[in-house]
Image 1: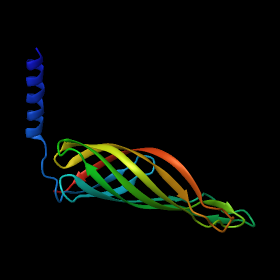
Image 2: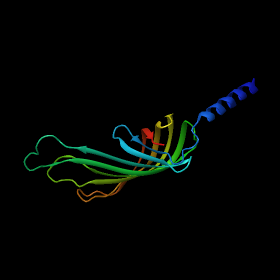
Image 3: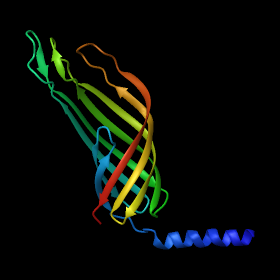
Image 4: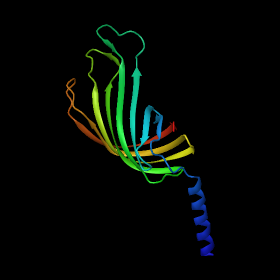
Length: 179
């Protein structure tokens, strides 16, 4: 019975490996990264195992109506840019990975203010654990978990000091690969 189960498992693994994608070198894809505030993600495979990802995202908030007397109407902006380095453990249809990423974000609150606030800047450094499933040769969906530090940088108006937060986030991804 043990030999039968072992033979069945090995046959299944070999069959899955024969249909798996084996060469991702030079593979280039774009897609979305996150759901609530999507980022444009560009991913490039240096070889079958190592990939890099560039992220950029932007939010805009414009409050409705006119500013009351003595107040200024401020349009809120949130701009993000990041870079990650990922190591994929498998070259098959399901590709789990581990990596690191860094993200710079600048955020200016929108609304009506008597004294206009300056932008708040932060830097995030994360350990990334995730997986990417290739539905087709050129399309993948994935899920990744980030664990890291969010460093809120000091600013002058109003006077704030640098604060460090530990955070986690779960991110949904979808990508289309061109080659």
